[in-house]
Image (cartoon, rainbow, N blue to C red; front, side, top):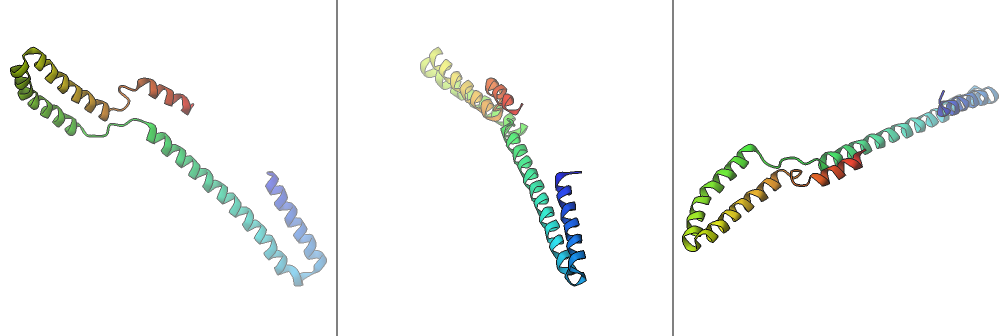
Length: 140
């Protein structure tokens, strides 16, 4: 039996003893008083359970927000790759035509850089492997 149940049993015994001493004319007031105490106990228990469930939901939401997720669809990534390749042709021609090999290398460095940034944006955990391992350590 729980300590709270023992207290409630003591309250009921005291209420019954008081009814025996005072008589039936105080019975409704004694019953109302006892039921008010039971209501308070139930309210406290429900409030604690609701708080605990809310805290668990907030913790689960916080854990879910830390997991890296892709921010776009396959179609967006595919489209970005196609546009990047289509624009690579004129950029290569302009860079190679104006400055020769150094211009071509600069143009392709820019194309590769833009694609690396896009990959890093859509896959946050790809380049931050160490950070993801540190975040997992906090969850244990």
